[in-house]
Length: 463
Image 1 (spheres, rainbow, N blue to C red):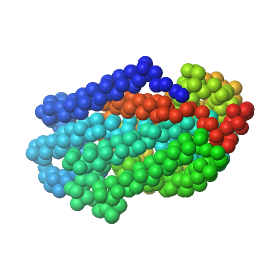
Image 2 (cartoon, helix red, strand yellow):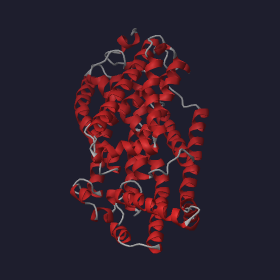
Image 3 (cartoon, rainbow, N blue to C red):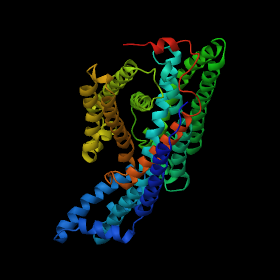
């Protein structure tokens, strides 16, 4: 049975402590003195002459007005300003711009926390779906890896509760840092969101989230229970039960994963939607989940806990990493190309924003999630080299974190983004929590299932 080493446990706890301190610091520093920010923006806005300043402020006014409409701010004041001229209108418009920048700065630690929380949660949920596929397809190669998957899925419940809690807290405390449709003032002045109010409201958002989490947890609970019971059973009844609930769960999962991606990610920008979005999130979820299975398996094998796992198991995991990376790229290009080609204003704005303000992370994550895995994992021999798989896995995970970053940040912080203390601290916090929960779960049961009907096939599996 696996023993959670004190060294790894100390690393996990240390990451959580460092992350918590950094997150607290990020929230504290985000509330900078209003006068200081106003002074900074004023120095940027004013040129050498009053004429240049007036022109600059007019430009800023238009940008600010458009931005505030997108975030659902009160447009009555904006209309009044546009109907006036002179120094007072200029000052009012500048104040609006300062308020907008301050709001984006306040949103940043919330957004960083949410991105990291969702990233680690989606890893565990992707592993849960991949685990269900193994049982539903009665795969013969993977039984030796099932307990590793069960350990990783232990993070699913706390991870999902954390994500939903952050989402609800951002609206319930009255600051509406993530989801602008939670702000009643926004809804009052936005006809498009009013039309979606039957779906986008805090009560039903919470109810749907509870249903998702309950369904996912129930499957994880019973599949784990039957898996353990099968070790001591005299027949395969528990395996058959797991097979049946796995097939049913996959249907439930495909529906709820799509709805979850609409609610928890796409609705940060309620004016935009994509019919491919649920599949796109699913592809990233699966490749991250399989990547973590590979990395944890290699680590455990290096410690002598999975002696029967051979190079062919690692090869197949790396093959899935490669395949889902290609699948993710296919969906990314399909979504991007169709929206770019149609050039419909309310759709193409999503990508225009990312090309203007997020060009490096937006294009960089395509290289990390497609070009790098394609070049590194295409060769069959490389898929059997442990350090090569680990290297590829680290790049893939970093790339998909940036992918989630690109989904959330443009709608919440606009052009006020960066990768700094809030983002890194959030990764450390949830990364440490993920390691602690997963490796604690791995200590609860033997890592090798004893009476899985396909265990012998898995032990002798060779590609």
